[in-house]
Amino acid sequence: MIIEQATKDDHQMLKDLWKEVFDEEEAFLERFFSTRIRYEHIFVAREKDRIVSALHALPSTYLQKGTEHDCSFIVGAATYASWRRKGLMGSLLQAVREAYSHPITLFPAVRPFYEANGYFTTSSLLQHPLGAMKKTSAQLEPIVFSELDRIHRKANEQDGALLRDEEGWKFLTDGYEAVAVQDGYAFLSEGKAVEAFTLTKEAATQLLCLLSERQVTAVQTLPTDPLSGLLEREKAVPIPMGMSTDQSMRGVYIAEQY
Image 1 (spheres, one colour):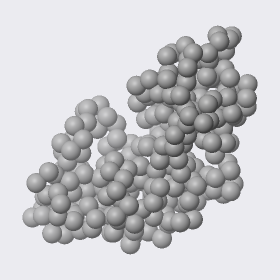
Image 2: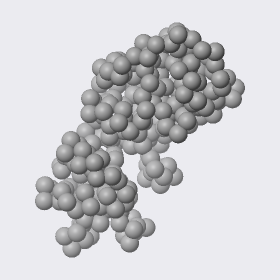
Image 3: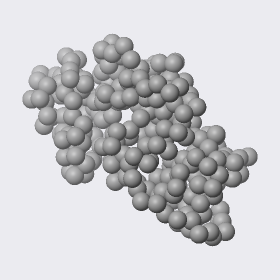
């Protein structure tokens, strides 16, 4: 078994592995493998010239105390079923840590596995129940990536956050229903606002009214967000978010992204 970095010749094998393990739609695969592929940042386990396990350590950036820092964000960590429980993914994770001096981050599918490999949860959101609210004249704003990014950065300026480039925002807005007001936004999935950030009490009030109209039953936000001040804090439950290998990232908000 060889653990090494991928090459351009591995393109189809990497794609086939991702498709089988995650049962991904072809449109997503084409998009990811045309916009996010960085062979020198892909680590593979190879058996007789066949890739049986792989992960993508995407070059990323996080904001902390007003300064941007480099990191890697792991996605597409996959192993063929017949090769699991042989320590391959643990070996790939170790190869990533040895390859970079900066922090490694990820959003876990199986949190205990990554904890066993030296990762810890950096932060949590609070999930608040949301009931019916009085209707207001809240006005929807268009989804503008630069505006989402401004709100995301400002909302997380206290503890920091993994940043998103424009392509990252596109992946999110294509994968979730997005709702925006002035100084606030939310991503919706299965009746929940899985990420909701606002900068003012007015924005929080307007966003909650719009979410209530859409029959959203739960809102996940930061403890410091104005939304938390308008919701039932005593009924909120913490939702663990992303993980890192570096204790300096404790408190940094890391969400699922591509």
